[in-house]
Image (tube, rainbow, N blue to C red):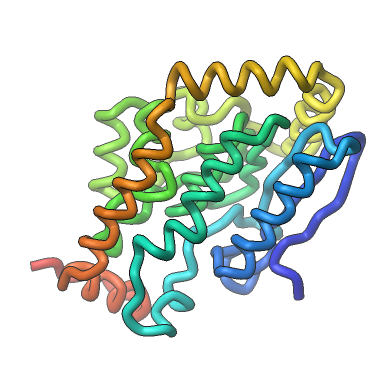
Length: 255
């Protein structure tokens, strides 16, 4: 079974994260497929907008921790440099609009992916969790920069420290998502995607470059720093306890 489904609709490419048995969590295959699909979409003249969503009732739980731990000790920095860092930059540098259609829970690295998209449309029942602190890691996948951009530094730190969920309506109020839909969620996504697909793509691309330069010109540097910090955090006793608690479905005991 492919980890990424794709379909087209009225000039939009719909990419669906497809590991429902693992809450659509990312593994190497899924990240690679997503990078390839975005690269193809960038050069395909028939694609004028990209929509990223999740299969079933979940957007994505983020990185599949159990898959990473199968290989024993790994370098988190090297992992980020091969996966999320280039993916986040790819989304931000893509000339065509990218919409995150957040159909359900969105956590960890998936939060970074959603925040990197140009627009976020959330189902009313969706929620966002920073996630990293729960397993004693630092934020990565651009979350340390992009989350404060949208909700402010104080809120970003609060929700990193507490690991509390941010509801769709809170995210809308704080400017983290652009629109929220209930029963009309899919119709809303289709309408926004259709409007973008019929818009002036060259102007959209230029505007995106301008926004990147004005607001997040240091994104690539931040991603590098996140990798360094994650490498350090990944070697701590706290992280080992956090992972053991996560896999054992219990509350971690940080001492």
